[in-house]
Length: 122
Figure 1 (cartoon, rainbow, N blue to C red):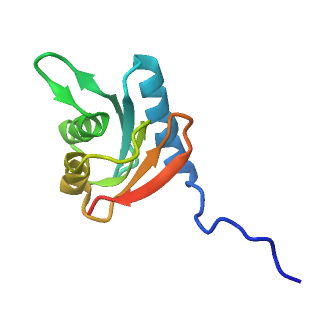
Figure 2 (cartoon, rainbow, N blue to C red; figure 1 turned 180 degrees about the horizontal axis):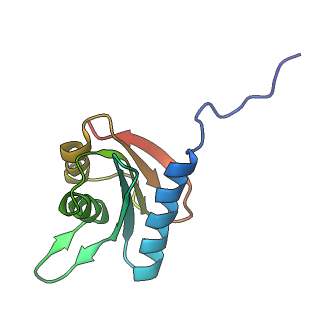
């Protein structure tokens, strides 16, 4: 008897679900295109939304990475971005790579919180 096919991709673990939920909340609360959250090597999380001022423009992910750096984080374990976009700019992935390393996973989720892709920061 054969088993029914299953999705080979495992769902996010509870800690990854948490940063997706936080990113989704930041996006909804501020009404901006993106929300992001990153988790550092000690498990602390940093949550941010898109910054769109006349004098300063930052994606939510770059803002979250900057907050982690400013708080003394030495590395990142994971990142999540909630957006309607289908891909992330190279500059966003570079910011994660600079702090977290090439293997740091970046979860790309839609506005509903469903993970559409896991992108290595490489």
